[in-house]
Image 1 (cartoon, helix red, strand yellow):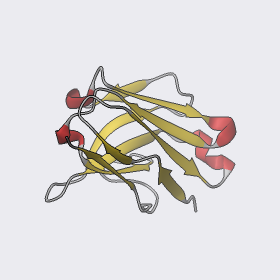
Image 2 (cartoon, rainbow, N blue to C red; image 1 turned 90 degrees about the vertical axis):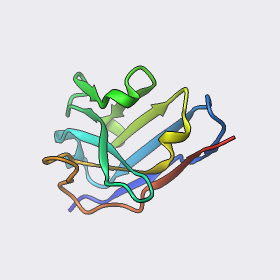
Image 3 (cartoon, rainbow, N blue to C red; image 1 turned 120 degrees about the vertical axis):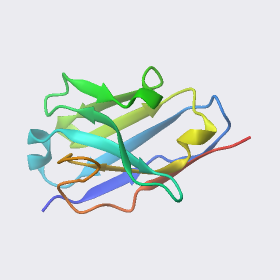
Length: 119
């Protein structure tokens, strides 16, 4: 079983940047595609970015395209989410997991990391 630990969240002003990290236990993590998800208060969890196992293919939900960049370092069993030009609507708890279908993840969910964008 892979355990996922998210970190790097915080409070920033609109237009600011944050870099999130997702650390996974076990080298088997490198064989999976990984996604970053977020859940805002009162809303359903959504998949915002996804990266292939090798890191060569990425995809993003429309609302973050051009502002967020997902990357990974398989030697470190870590996936990153660079978030630039942050907006108040990006406020949410961010999670990582292996995508299955919809907003579901293959492994158990970690605690997530809170991102708050406010002036």
